[in-house]
Length: 246
Image (tube, rainbow, N blue to C red):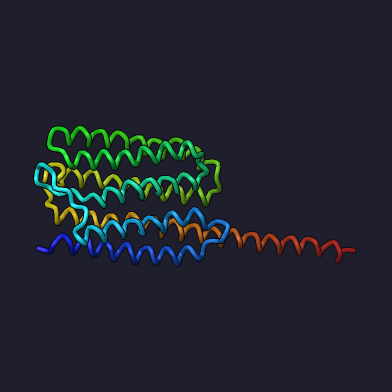
């Protein structure tokens, strides 16, 4: 059987390569719009550090059930998933207060999942259910408050928001399922398989989010620039006609 370190090493490489790709993509974003996109580049960079630590055997916590909980993984999630929430909110112009509420709920979801993973039954299930409730709050805000703000944005920005929202909601719903069948839950999956599945989903979620955000936004910016250029040509043409008529 492949050692768990292999999956953490591959996860590290995936995050490092993803960070490099997103950093390059960042150069294509107009200078005045670049700052929020630093967030999506930072996400796989943070994850690369966490996976690097786990690959080196650092951060494993043995529970009373003789299972191992990897602290860097949960620290990574507690930092990076609220960053994704913040980026999605900033995209539609959410207020600081609203961003803080939703990001806090998301961070609390991760903390509750971590605590539950360290405890034996039935307390582990109590924290699991509490985490499910807080995540439901995040989804609620996504589809109510953020959606209302998206309706006030351009079609392009609203479309990008909905694409990113669907992307994270679908992928983040997989994690509670993994927790349930992993050693932290009913134990249908062993630690090595859990590490493989989580590493793969993590790379897809973090790098994929950034690629969608950057690619779609750059395309929108190019389209706006093209429309502005066409508008300028039309304005010049309309200005020339009167002189001809004269």
